Length: 179
Image (tube, helix red, strand yellow):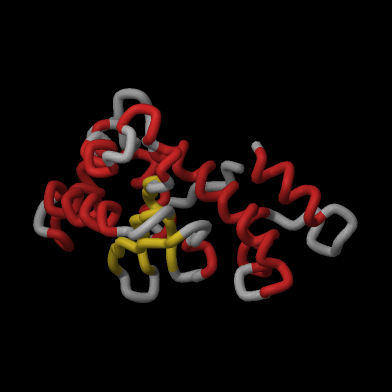
């Protein structure tokens, strides 16, 4: 909520007011005078996306997505290990995203420090993300990031990821505005 309130304060009365969140992120990403706008907009997006990626009991990976993941990574388990390793290796605070790179026609795992966000590259369609800011896990796991991350795929909503992947690969169209 704080990110939204601060973002609204920063853009009220400016030409940025009324822009869609994704457009606001792209517009402010490389403008040093809009760094506060970018950080708050990106953090709003990152948190909103993260909460959509998980659900209390997780889900099974759908067959089409499982086949695509296995074709690229060798197995779903190998992908999960690479994703978790990237999250464990991210120094400091930030986000790890699993994206579909439309230009490459392949999945990719991207690490972003602080408020980094994949929306700054139109070729990337985010599929999943994990929050590796310490506040995301400190209450339950103290400073034990690996323990927190070991539980991530127990709560992943694979259907959320599949909808984004199918949209990115033109298999289906879903309007995915969720903020």
